[in-house]
Image 1 (cartoon, rainbow, N blue to C red):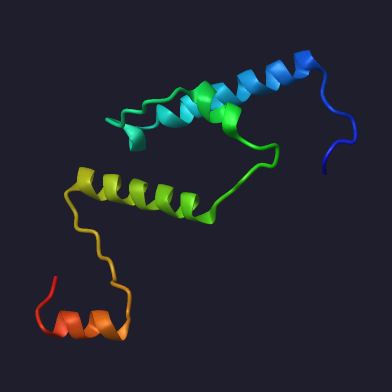
Image 2 (spheres, rainbow, N blue to C red; image 1 turned 135 degrees about the horizontal axis):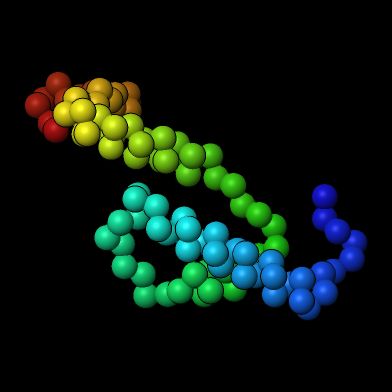
Length: 97
C-alpha cells in the first residue's frame, strides 16, 4: 500500500542509497560477469519510478542460468525443448537448426 505521507528528505536519501547498493549487489552476481555498463547504479536508480516492478521472466532467467551453470560444472547436458509452431516444426523437418 502506498503511503499517504511522503518521506522526509533524509529518508529519501537512505532509500536511494539502499536501492543503489541493491543494484550493485545484483550486478556483482556471477550471471553478469564480464558485462560492461556505460552507466552507474546511481544512474539506474535515479531513473526508476516509485512503483516496484517485478518481472516473472527475471525469475525464470535466473533459474535457467543456475541450471546451465550446475550442468556445466557436472559436465552434463541440458535437455531443452523448442517452441512448437508450425513454422519451426517444418523448419526442423527440413534439417534446420
